[in-house]
Length: 419
Image 1: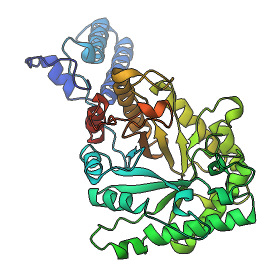
Image 2: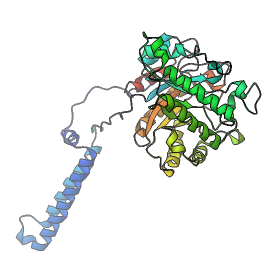
Image 3: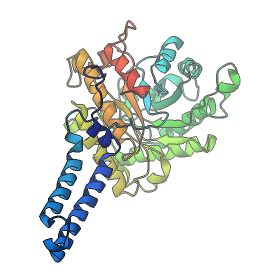
Image 4: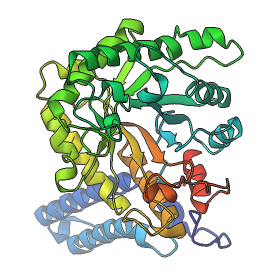
């Protein structure tokens, strides 16, 4: 998969192909137009002078020049013509990101790095790092940050999961979805937690001072919440309340790290019915929150789709909303997308289908990167993980036992700049 369809012995280049190889398509068109113009000029001159004033009949002169022009146009189609070489588009350093569904050992992070991963998206659960009001415990995060840094990976966290004691209008089973901008108590607690996180892992974070043997790779980009437009992660699904959360997050992060960046929650592209708000519609309403544009540095999308061909219209719809609100230059992150190797969901394509969808998706995204300002992408996921969602069971490039699937090899080829 992914290589040439079949190798054949090199054939001697025909003379006409050597001529064709000296031009690219635009040059061929230009030369053709020049010859056609000369042809028309020659015919016009011959018509004025008449056959007796020229050395060859005007018709023959015109016919000869036309034949030359046709020959030049036909050069690309002559049998055995060498196809034009297309360069692989250059992408940003942090373009090939990965989501891990569970904490991994250092060996797995190094394995990611060898396979071309440059940035690791990890979830930081508020209800895990603040087990009781005002008391912070970073033991669930420290090992991941340390091992990712040792492996040379940039850590990109998304923060969510409200503790039960801060939840509003929720039960203990679903308080993690309670959007923490509904009350003054929630908002203050959220800001305090963010300041503690940036104070731990930011440029002046105490984590780096406490662990001098760990290569210093401070976290500068912070993603606020996850799928704020989808019932599984956010209650209520309110662009105005989410906008307030983004604004106070910006304040909290910049109070500790003035250069810190805020990334919007990855919006689920197409939630069904009452389960959520379509991503472009949610973003459009979010832009109506007064002052919101100065509070974030990147928009994020989760463009899950049945087929890789659907990525472009979904990304385009988000870009049109951004342009409509004067935000065309703001980067776009694709913080989750992928297809599974199983068949139990609409995103499951089987072992071979996962390889095919991955290759088609990254080939397309490399072409779209510059015109659509796609700064980063994160494949979901590195590893299979049972018991959380049907798709999660087979979404990984690596099985739960650590064995690589064929899709990992294809990802590695693409991430290392090969076709």
